[in-house]
Image (cartoon, rainbow, N blue to C red; front, side, top):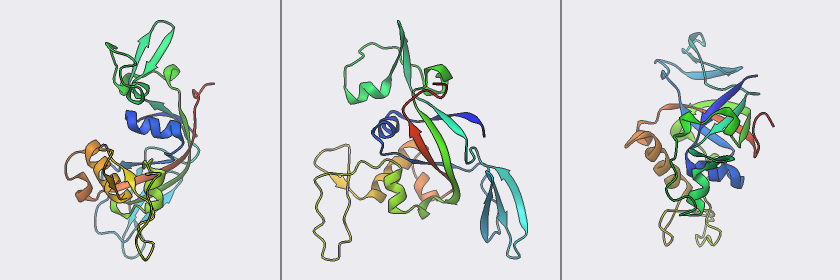
Amino acid sequence: MADLPILFSAPMVLALIDGRKKQTRRILKPQPVQPFSSIITHNGIWATADEDGDALDFLPVRYAVGDRLWVREAFAPVQGGVIYRADGERQPGACCGCMWRPSIHMPRLASRLTLTVSDVRVQRLQEISEADILDEGAPVDPSHRDTSQDGSNPVMCLSDRPWITQSPRAWFHRLWDSINGPDAWDANPWVAAYTFDPELRNIDA
């Protein structure tokens, strides 16, 4: 078990605080070589396997089950402590003129969120299920009503335009491209999918 930092954007920090986000996906670097027939995970290690089941590569994923992750987010030091940019996104104008510092520079003592990893999976990005998308922090539209005859559209997500909703998959597609660049979704990389239990407290508290 290790204590390690992890970066999140302001919208994802808010999803963690609201209890909506319980998973995150990070691109495997380097990507598995081909040919391979399966991905094996064991104690935080993934390996590609050939058709005979023989391992071809062993490389570590970034986090393992049992690790505690302290969240780094954009922040600003102020007299008596720190303030967090995510809070300003919830209440625009809450900190006009703040000298925000990037999340990569947040020290451990300023972190307010701790995530304990409970599961690690390796999969193609587009293999994500709708249930996992919701655990990625999808903002579900509370007023949506499924009008399909077969019940195939029970959940829709809010967008950045209040009059438009989108499917969970479309929401995650746009989120992934906004973080990783245009066409990042279409590239369909191998990713490590981390499930965690979030706590709203500093890791040393």
